[in-house]
Image (cartoon, rainbow, N blue to C red; front, side, top):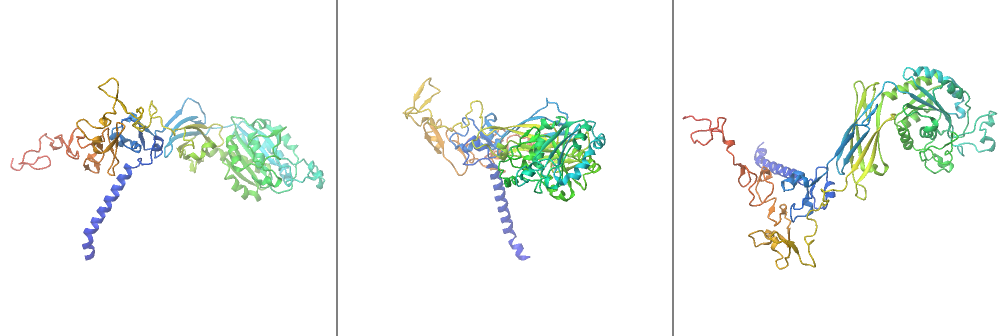
Length: 611
């Protein structure tokens, strides 16, 4: 205990020193948030952060380094820069409210950003309508192992149409089939098996194919049933099938499939095997990546033997781009494989079927449709050229009764609206440092409407109507002619050769010292010396930001605009540190009396025991 008491004054002193150092560091950090000796241009300054500004005022801080033009706006103003001569990292958000929309609003937004910390926020609203027309495309694996399942599907059309009347009065159906790429080693290329891959089983079946579009979207359910009854199986050699390859074609070949613009689009993939992924085609010597385009000729996929299977990223992009929900109806043995797959495909749902019988399949489609519609999510994409230079944050605001999950709301009821608070920021400028225009798309998954974001990236500085950002950054000798400085004198109407008195313009009136003794005269202008104490500036280097006393941690109590040894401070204050008010208001009591009577006491001389 004694030892602690004896060391207490020392500890208190150390704590005070530490507190002083921390406060000083914090103050210096705030003051130096923008300034750096490496800043030599307006663009450099604004990349220091959205709080920084650059002064392009011609006479700002005469004689100092260019880096002192970069500072916090308040600091620039205190040193004499007028607001109209500041280039700032202003962020603008303009919403076009003239475009009508029934589901997604607004449809167009324009924002202006600068790099290094600037960001813009806006809200996109997505409304769930009461009823939608529905397009459902059956994409069925017709390999030999699906024979029994294909037979069960021939009665599904009418029953599904009746069940879906509870959710839509306008159901259209389409149909397509797939097996695998018709090349070795995915199929047998023996001559006897090219046209009939089931010949060894004494069965007649159709040739293997990557994708065959059979029936375009139709509201004629009888036609759909008739087409289904004509379908025959095919065969291949390896276990995985070409389902993802066929899915992409069904998504992008809109005209052939007949997807309706106003409908909710469902793509139902039915298979009992896993699917080939990108790069699998190298086994067949196919190395060309998929281009994401439609390649149908007479409703047959002609790119199957020329391009690789699509990547999951490409497939996801095309499903979103074409407003398609995907439903995977798979045999229970393959459920785990597809469970991992659907996590990478937004707007997808997985169903497990023991047998592909009509009642089971109808329940799956109806339940999937209700679940997909009740979950509202958005996908944000940006042009490939600029994707690394921007970041996006999405926060959903879900209606009552629904729950938020990541970037979506689940349990949304018809007629409710989900709001998405979206923030966009810019990390950097293009390599050439020029301004750029970038297009960003906010796309609600499965909706045929979206919000287009036009981003104007400002990497260059305008610096007012003159476009000159440097102010006094040009050489002081810019007006010289053959090494002789010339200047315009206010008392003469012509140019006068100042070579006879080269330093005259560097001396203040009544002074015989160049640049107040704190700089050198170059070509008729003062270049002020740099001090570790602060900034020296002014036409004659007569100003600085460190000569006046400090009050409450601020130069002259923060009550001066420019600092020199003769500057009196703001009107209404006096004293060396501008800490003493000239007004008597602070010495007046509530009844207007001044505390000038020596007989009285109290803050305002309001007490007088002898009066």
